Image (cartoon, rainbow, N blue to C red; front, side):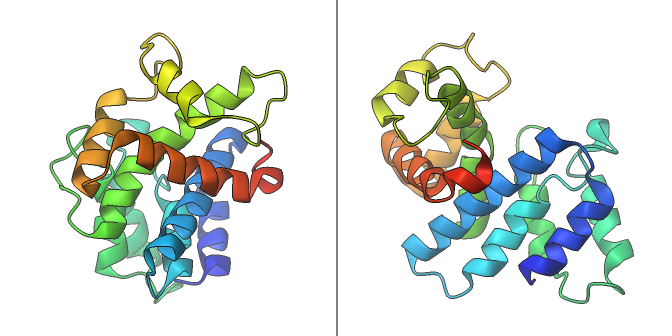
Length: 189
C-alpha cells in the first residue's frame, strides 16, 4: 500500500496526536528495518506501521479485532488492502488480545518494535535533551529492567519479539533506536 493512501486511512480513524505520533514512529521503524533487511518493498512496511493501531482509538477493548472490519469496509476505497496487511496488523496483538502468531519477518518486526518504540520514546523524554540523538542502548536496557518505568510498554512482548526475530534484545533495541534517530526531527524526539 502506498504511504499516502495509508495516511488518508489513518486520518479517517485516528485523531489523537499521541496515537498518531506512535503510529508514525512505528512506520519509520518498520521502513528502516525493511531497508536494513533488504526487503523489496519498504514502503509497504512503512504503511503497515502507520496503520497497525487503526482500531485502537475507536475500539480499545476490541483492538486488533475491529481492524479486520475496518480494512474490509475500506477495500473499495483502498484496493491495495490485502489479506497480508490485515493479518500483519492482527498479529501484533498475539498473546495480548488474540492468538494470531507473527509468522513473516514483517509481522515479527512489527511485534517487536511496537512496544519498543514506546519505551525508547519514554527513555528519550526523561533525558535533558528530550531526544534519541544522544540516547544509548545501555540506557534503554537499564530502563528496560525497571518495570515501573514506562510500565505500559510490555517487556515480555519486546522480549518475545526479539526471540521471534532470532535476535538479541540489545540488537533489536539498537536497530529500532537507529530507526528513530534517522527521523528524529519528524518524530519530535
